[in-house]
Length: 358
Image (cartoon, rainbow, N blue to C red; front, side, top):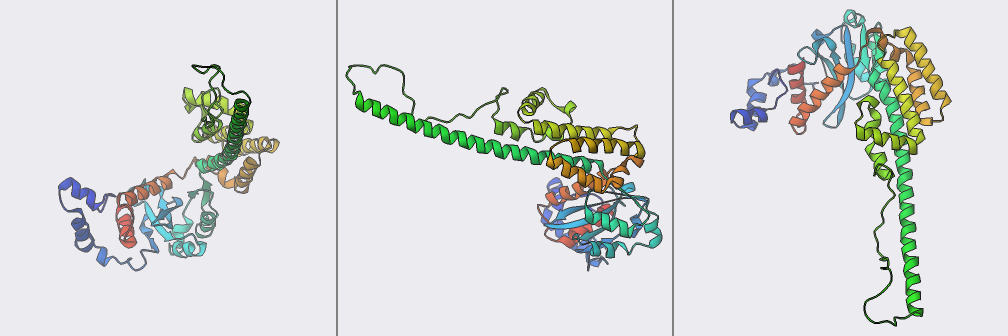
């Protein structure tokens, strides 16, 4: 339990012992939690200076509905000596106050810090690590344009829902009109024949509305719902069914096709291993021109976001560094929290994180 994120209950099921009793004994007797020197401020922050390195990652995650910022060392590879510090909240002054306790020579020795597009993380790194190169993760850069596509998709879906409701209302009105016509006709032309009723079968007044379907069998709403994850993937990863759906989607919604094309162009720049920072900059400016020529407000807003931190985005091409280590660490923390079905004692949870990753 000191070196692996496993719960006492899971160990109890494995070794046929009382998991709750094991957890109490581990907390009170087997571990040194009760004599832990950092216990007074463990819920708010902790600093493990001995884990400092030259290539760091910073990211935030939620624990017990509270956001914590984690600073990690990439050389730890998500294992022992990975965690450097954590701070409760997203207030820049609080995070800086904790990280400034790191000796100045160690802070100035940091070469690179990777992060997402967070302004909070950016301000913290600029102040605490003055010599560090800030690299914004390329996946988060692509995600910004992906969010723009999602906004366009949701707008199209809202319009499709509105159109379907309008068609359904018209369908019901048409049924009522036909029912009234049949009633008037029956009053003017009473039944004069005997035996089985002749003529075509009358349409029921409560007939079920069947929405319009497209060539692949989907309704417009279903088409826009099913394409959500597909639009975040590269085209070569699509299945045959997804390719067919994409052809129908792009034919009916040209805005989504245009936005997806711009996303693929940006992704191809970031994937090109032959580019350096300077050549990538010229390619990125060409992409800016493509976006400027489009009429998509959402993609233009994403372009402006990338423009604001262009140099930090282009720093990716220096060492091809990503924030995957921080995302992996966050995933392990979330998985550990899920095993516990929630965090009842935050201090003890943080103690265990420090034991496992500190």
